[in-house]
Length: 304
Image 1: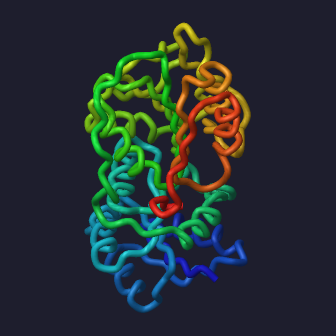
Image 2: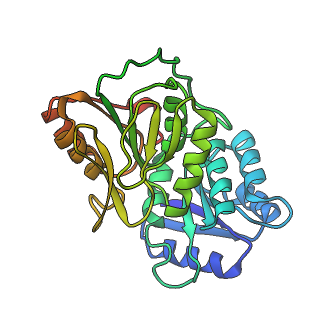
């Protein structure tokens, strides 16, 4: 059994999260806490395997409490955040501090609001803990890039925030055009692109439909109702394609990689990073079959 402590200042949210988790036979909700004081006492008394933590709480907020947890008693923490710009910024900071993942708090509480949370809890219980507040390692800075029509395509999920920060901060200002699908709620991708843009030499933004892929630019798939694909070859462009979930996700890494295999073929480099599930495996295989070079993050450095 995976022992979970639920921390949220809203009694309604505590009840909803607990009820969702209790439906899973592998998960036991061992306690509920409304603030950091109760949570501290419960962690000592109950020794949970996983913690769900609200970001906005009275007295000590979730970020401050997370920082203390990761320094004094490291454990897998899943952040529960509101779908707002402020919530997105706080969630990204939480992931940098070492939180395992984030789940969106629904605007209207009701059945089905946290249906994917049990899967996240199970993955968190198996995850590798990251050190608080820093990247596991720094990639060496790349030399300048001479435009030769090549393209870099990256896919990532849980743990991808830190992995992408590490990789992209090493790219030169004139690096190859780079397209990325990172599993993340819709409201969070714009804040993440802005955060990457502040820390990287290359220009990072959410991908726009029809945007021409240019050296020195990084295009992040917007979360929401469309898949990011690459179309054309002279020059290649971004295309946002509405449609159903692919490999359980929208945007999907498989959808991106498959389009890159078709449009760019051997002139592409495909990279799959840390994350839950299989999204990206078939697409990376398609890139490999089209002659592209393909890389996977090593297991030892992956969160999942």
